[in-house]
Length: 541
Image (cartoon, one colour):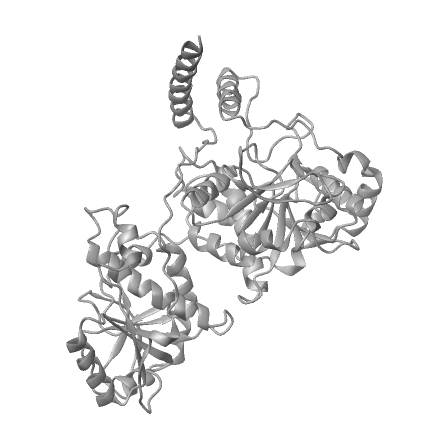
């Protein structure tokens, strides 16, 4: 009998999985991704300063770039000798850094996951060697400084007047570029950027810079490459080329203009370690804005309502023609842009060394009445280790237990499928990661984050039972993102499959919060307060 039950369950799983995938890829519906744990691999650490081989020289920089790093295998003293001779000839100060070999632990641990068709083992070692220098640059340079460094490999030669030639170019070149290749890598010169007034040398836009033997790099560009190339799939020079390959011009997402923020006063400034609190709301939805104000007033929380993008915003329309219409709805693109703008604001307002937390919520949530006290009761370790902390568990199975409140019946678990963005705490460093990693949206933002968690590029925790829940969609509370006909046959099948999957993986079901803050909210007071203080874009209704 037990065997028959297991057999039946397996057959059901296969059938429903097939139907589920068929429907999700045939119709415009949010995808549900199951996690496939990625095997832990040896991380690439920044350089240990004791490993640097210092070459003295009276010239400390090449143009605006300093220090100079030379990547060299310890097993190649011949090349090391030539590099030393080169620096001594130019009287340049430099640091020789040890390259990874194909026998290094960090390389061998990645070898089994390497695409052997596109990435050779030696190219993997080359990637790791440059990655380690980028990490060192990022760690040693404050965000606001955004200084330049030089990275060269140990098989190069340089023009005898290189320091003087690089010094002769204008400041504009250094202000606008991320990378400056000292060699043109055999690519056709692009647009003329600058020309030396003292030497017969020019700076052009690099159209196909397929080399890494000598380049200047900004510290902010080093941070970008750390995030964007954290999972090597091809040779490092080819990877950089694909990042630089011209993309059709689109309206960029700017950080928030502070004058657009709608400030809600409150004596409690943070939830746990996280402050400020941002609430994403469409200016055209005063109903949800009223509820958000009432919620914050009930909890006595200070918060800032930020304008969400609509599907009619210029920034969204400029991206629409490049959108994958099968995987990404226009409303989901607007949702991505709204969160992206808050991440940019967090990154701009927080020094790298601070690495502070913020809260981002959408305007359709309810919160536990004791949310500030519960979040405060968790240990410091939780805040030190995570990138994201979901206040609602997003209907995912609880992962490893991380922490448990000593005063309240709430737990923190590893998030195994955090497919939601309605309420989460985020570190400023994680905001920077997401800015780089999700700069080109290809699917709904929650699904994109699931993939990053799956690939161990983000560490996410979730609170169980949930502190935050989305209010149910109804005629009086329509969704701005998922405008679904809940009476349709397709939706009913999708919902049945979703519920079956939840049952199969023993996902705990919570229909409501223990103590809803919205149930105690004074909506009449909130409406009056909103109408009194709304101005600008908020007062167009």
